[in-house]
Amino acid sequence: MEKILPRSTPSSKHFKNAGEVTYSICPMKNRPSPASFVPQREKETPLGRFYATREKTMALCKPLYVEDFVPRYRHFKSIKWHLGHPTWLVEKLLLRPFAKKYKPFHEKIERFFSSLEDLDAGGDFTRPSLDSLISYRNYIDEEISNFMKTGFESLEEEEMYEFQSILLFITELEKEAQEEILTQIKSRFFECDVRSEYWPTAEDGSFKCKSSLSPLKWINFEGGLVNVGADGREFAFDMEMPRHTRYIEPFEMAQRPVTNGEFLQFVEEGGYERGGLWLSEGWEEIKKNKKNLPKFWKRQGGAIKQYTLSGLKPLRLNEPVSHISFYEAEAYARYAKARLPSEFEWEVASESLSLIKGNFFTEGHFHPEPLCDDELRISSHLRAMFGDVWEWTTSLYCPFPGFQSADVGLWKYTGRLEGSKRVVKGGSCLYDGSDFRRTIRKPISIGRDEYCTGFRLVRST
Image 1 (cartoon, rainbow, N blue to C red):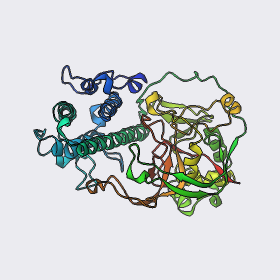
Image 2: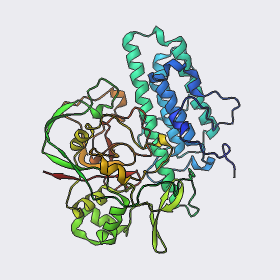
Image 3: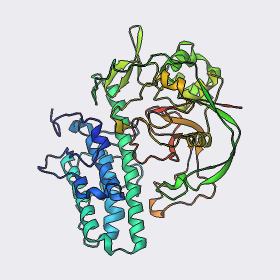
């Protein structure tokens, strides 16, 4: 079967040090690394962040076959689309308006990768070829580099600020595209009889902590008037702003997310058969789909295994449960005589942690990491708030008071009124954690379980 490159598995350093290693899925010889266009001293600039993110996207594509790029998986857009669309945005929003000498790669490329006219476009096409698409990405990266060398300094100060803001905006969209790629690969490979391994690992048996955890520890928060949201001093999507004041009641939050072992107990005690635990729509959905296990769990003999991007593995009881819908999280919370947090409770609680670090895909695991009981017992702080799993909240994805939408030309990416969706917080092991913000709000439909979503519990005090 034809492949676009020798199938290989980059290590986690490919993501931690993106910009220092050359990746290419293009047969073009001697293709320079996009980050090689950026001097070392500029790695922390908006341009450096842009190139590093683009490099990671290409690294994620290294294990794939050509055939993986074209088909759409259900409501996901194709991988080909996710490579082309952010590239087209660079051309549309930066090169055409700012680079006066820019010559387009191809005048008809917009019809394939534009969504400003048709948000439902998704890349169901076989042409342009994958090689042409990669050449398009390379061309745009080089044109941006040329402009930064020869034209950027001629811009007015306000234009420079606008250019860099849009560049950071597109960088964030590229991160979302990376997560979409990994998410659909996992679902598609799981449903394939072959059960392909996307990212082989040798970590089985390497984890030394106990498989069981001590009873759940709860951490108190006083509540009251609190400030939430982004303050605008650094890049953030408009739906994260403005920073504003909310009142929240006192509450206590679980030190850690709910684990596979705890959710397995819910399953074994008939959680999927007890209608009183479920929201009515959720109950109808699991009955319609005959669902009695979380997505990616599979009974095999007398044991339950879990599909990962490294293949089918034994279920690790002490890792955060993942790929859980809002319906499932709500049902478990009622079962545990607790509830899910609001996004404001979650954000306030996260501010008790000074550092934003966790198991994002930049760590190279692509799966939630087990929790260590020894660390939990000696700590009085929240654990695994960032990375591992996006955590469900009860909050609807609606604008904050005083919301002002960004550039009207970007309305289909910003200020999206998706009030039927719930906000998830904290990122996941399938998301790029570089420059992650605690204010990030991701909207997900309440019945969706393809994304790496989990949850932690809170109780009112």
